[in-house]
Image 1 (cartoon, rainbow, N blue to C red):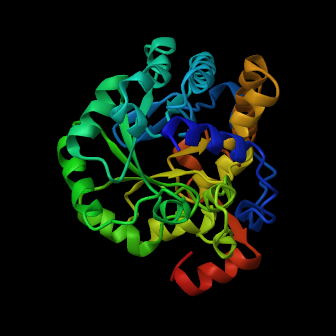
Image 2: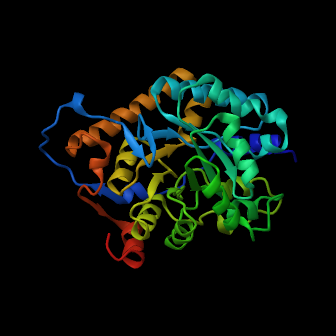
Image 3: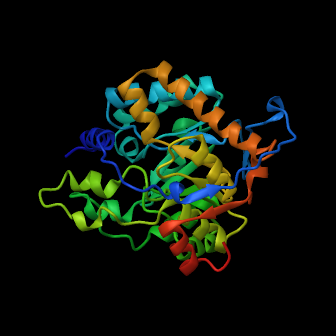
Length: 343
């Protein structure tokens, strides 16, 4: 099967995903504060993600590209929405365009529609330094995402099986590509152990991509004749993954993603120490089910939800949410008690 057809299958299955049950953000509660001393108009959504200054804590996380005219149209609308609402945008894996120049247009449309916006390029961990540089140049990107997707590859019928040089290649890219490099998972979360490995090779940006959103085990299993369904529940939930990363790398620039449903989930991630949060499936479903105008309204609504949390917690700046009073319940509390010394 061609990469472009596979991209379209991924979109189709992601749009039809089943309810995943408990979301880890449902097992975290922010403690309500009845008094606040700030004015709504004084609240700023500007966020500092390492050396990147973002107008909003929310960004459109990596989804699509490389599927011909259909994905080009999707990326065009996502870029317009990002421009209209002032949020950053990450494209899906550019590996297809690096191997077939005919697919470049489906990614480049993002920069064409949003010439002054913050755009993240995206490659797989199999990418060489030369490919990473080409991906960044293709979009005049402000940063580069490298996605870690071992389980997805193992379940994918035509997936990779050799990962022996991945860490070495990532290190070379981090040191030489010339823009911030964000290591991200694709729905299975980042552990303490992986965080330590990434820190050792100079990574300072991590998108946890936790369990709770689009399930790529499930997506790839739908493409198999004999599904490996025992892995559909595999992974680290987003809340616990954020804590795993921050417990061993407190200064890391953390992006929360994986089942982010609204601005309150985003605010909770900032309370945990995140510097930004990404939404993908939620935004794509809104665009595909409704239209571009509805998508723009949804982003505005997420911003309003986030602002309300800031107001309630007395935070004029997004970073001031970090560490605000909160509790954990259920399996999240159990996980943290066994894995995190202080939480």
